[in-house]
Image (tube, rainbow, N blue to C red; front, side, top):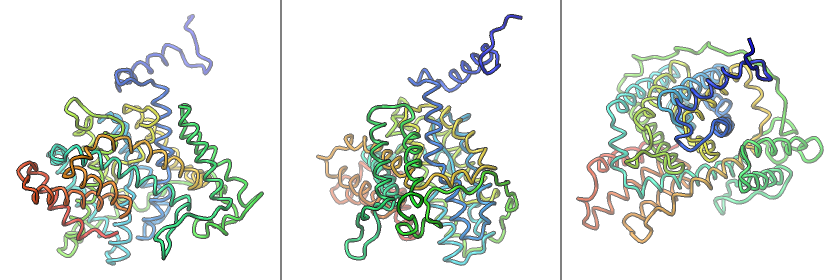
Length: 466
């Protein structure tokens, strides 16, 4: 009769029980976090990776998947995969269609090799089946155990530089040059707005303001509104990235989900011998990209178990594999763990509650995807750069006085951003590590699994060029 009621009309007792259940299920206090911090971290992770809702369908559209169907598939895979990561693996890691492997799928297989779309999706499905078998037989765990600490730390640093480079490229601050390879852009309204947003984001992070990265995205978006309205012309500085004179544009609110491309998979046709090399390239590419992401995030966020391995790695790999398995039937390229998960971890996120929040935030975009058009690339670029800063922390853990450890680690750090490929950068580093040990007479110190990894790396270097 006299039960207290909150301002929102819900019984305080019910809210308290729900809060207690969440804290106990995810072990929030045990991990040194709070529910509020986990929610902020989840929202930060989502915003850092939300571009996938638009970018992945745009890439897959080149392969012939209708954009609206691609949006629906991307949202469903991201929601289901991230939700499973939250509830089963209980890790703060977001799952979504991979941004490197979708280029391999769309441009190398369908556009370049002229593989029919349904057969290409069949290749994705068979690759995911093999990938899932490897995950459930703990092959990736054996690989993790065999990779030396120096290379694990280097992977984290290399991916940090890579994601920071993506931010600079997305902001058009760095662009290609035929004489100097790359060059910095001249100052214009877009570059000045990006720099202002970067300074604001850095200041918020330095002052340890809760939700600093989210606030940075919001502030930079607001600063970008005048471009094309009060000053400058977006098309003058960003012709391939802006269809109108303004950078921030309203394109509507609602868009109905499109399920027209569900189940468009040719399983038998994709087993033809000429497609087998593509299946294996998909397997190994997804294998190394997801493995490197788990290693990089666990090192950067110190999310490790008592043995020094990524926390709940077995469960996380199961989720990662099953999400990839569901991707082709839903109509998209394979899903994988996202390096942008580091954005939420950098905000203090430690548990599966981060992934739960991120998963829930995907669902509305089955209907509200046009809202993402409000956020320009220069608004997310500062966040990507800050993630790069956070992930460089592990560089101090590399023994730079031991050349046999330092040289392969340095090559991984250098080549991931310079080749613009996580897979190729890591593969080349692994090859050099094994060869160096062999040449200095220390081959016996290399664990057997590393020899297999190096052999697969040679295959990847020869096959994967994208």
